[in-house]
Image 1: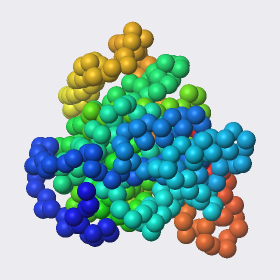
Image 2: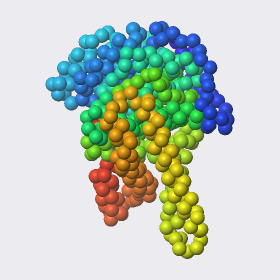
Image 3: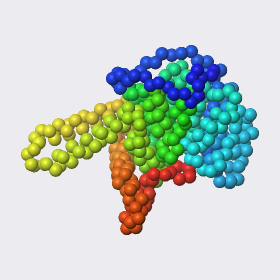
Image 4: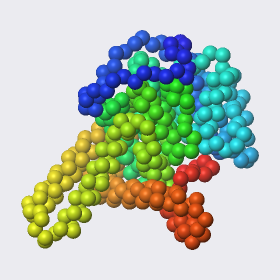
Length: 420
């Protein structure tokens, strides 16, 4: 089934109405035969493991027209990696193993495969899947995901429902399992905002080929390329959504240090995307979230500063406290209601959710990471010109503070991809 729009063509954005921000769009469905679809799956990898082999096997089984492109992003030539790559390469004629000339990181590795597909493949794919190399999929994940995407002509991308594979490993992974449940709920709710959820996550997303090539692939140099490309898809007139019946599992960080590194990248990278985007409507949820955060901080600070000065009635402070408690109660009830959708739940997960305190501490730690990301963005903006001056004292001060931020996990450039 070939695309009706030439690859790389632009799409005229549809007009925007107020209802796009409130009521989920109901797009008309079109007929689509999954069995006739040409699908390309791109799996960038650095130091692949057994799960990578399993993923390629599962992808091949999901469709007879599936072609899998595994991109070796300059993996060190270790004995174990050689064996895995050899096994992948000899698995099927529908598997192509690509080797990047230098370590390109995920966005660069994806673009390397996209260029190869565009230049070398006779029949252009209808759908392009992008996946992490440790993802586990269900038997019908790919079929349901691709069908959800291609039956709606306005959709440029659809992402899988993300779940945690190593949820039972320890206390921290259980908390992340509950958090990922919330991520899925947020993506469902975000269908009522401008053209859908904020991020089509890198774990597993299906892109309409004409949409991804029309967006000219992934922007290299970003800390979270999946968020960045989603903004450009939405800015180009495409809608995006979560495919509920397409589950996929991934391993999450099992130690606090690796989790902290991951979240500094996510949260700082997200702020950078918002700050640099040319399509503000595509990040409207984040704009509202950041605005509400600063408004809350400002209100609290203002009340502290003018306390006892008679500028505000004590009644106002009482109302703020009451509304905050009401918001917290509503959040708690909603979290309990969400548990009905958590298929992997057990009594320990229920205990965590009912007790509130662990999740409360966890969320506040992430708030600390978010505040650090704001400071890091402010620092980089303020010192960008200083770095170009010849004043050695200023340069030394900037270098020192940069090392402090790096020690805390904040960096503008992510290094060679390693396991989290």
